[in-house]
Image (cartoon, rainbow, N blue to C red; front, side, top):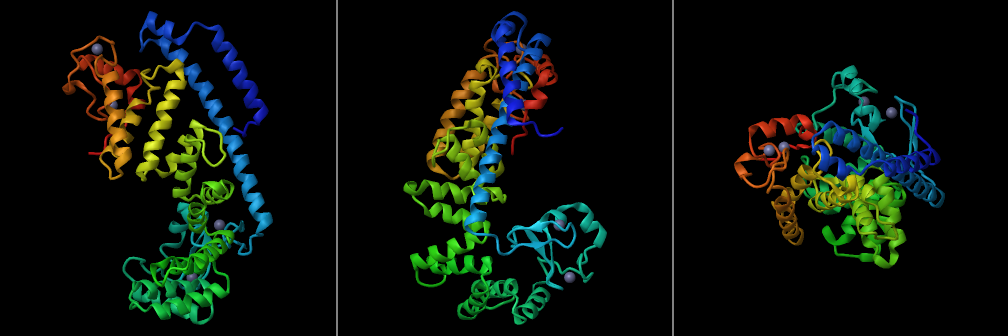
Length: 409
Ligand SMILES: [Zn+2]
Ligand SMILES: [Zn+2]
Ligand SMILES: [Zn+2]
Ligand SMILES: [Zn+2]
């Protein structure tokens, strides 16, 4: 399906809203026919189609906002390190380890997209796609890799100088810890304006290797960020205070546009709390936090967005099988509850007990009150309670199989 335009989506949403307003309410249908009836199912489907379209519209507008940020950045700092991928011939903007896969044998590279396409690995049987050398194992063949990369470094290739310099700085991959030597290599690469090297120097100035020098740290970090280094963009965004919210948003957006998970989590938080000059959007908070669910804070924000969306959609009825966000909300809240971040840990515990007490005093299927002990809840998600086996089976078929999410332990 071709992407629908903003206008088409707006018209569709408006007409869906009008037709829904003309029909009897979802609540009256549920009162009359029950939560799992075909009538309820059909009406819930209409609500789902409406919210899917609303979501698509918000994502479309957001993709336009992001594209404008990227355009602005390209005007201010025209991309310098752009090259064509030898496989797909696409121009790769900002050639660095986020966008490409480097082969240490010949020093060539292919874009990440091409590398991730399964066929590449199959086609070349563990050999370099460019020169057909055997690719050494990144986990075991440190020595072999070290020798290969050093050859390139000695020929003055910036990426290789950065690689060797970082190994010396950290004392890893068969290189003894030697900060002086490490810095020498990295400075050579930084002189060639290698973004990775500039980012590494920023860290040195942050006080991790040398004495802290805040202004140098900012200088190198910004240089790396403006050359398209994703992590540098995300890190730089964090250095701006709330007074510089435009800059903070600008660099967070750039990093997120290149797939940086942390930056996505940051954007998700901005959208849920309407920070950095953005309008609150639960849909976009959900969209971005979902890309960083490994992070507890993002997982927490994700579940909050789902909860608030649940209260806005389906006339606020969150327990319709096949449309219920409750198991997913509980899943991520429990993850946060078991985690390490203290203030939100407590909030998660509170939210879980509030949600649980709302749903566990009646059967999720027949709505009969009481008698739902813990032993009769769905063992897979621990998010639905039943009066008995029969109701549980019916509820699963009615749509819980869509809502249910396997708990971690
Ligand atoms: Zn490619
Ligand atoms: Zn090669
Ligand atoms: Zn029941
Ligand atoms: Zn379940």
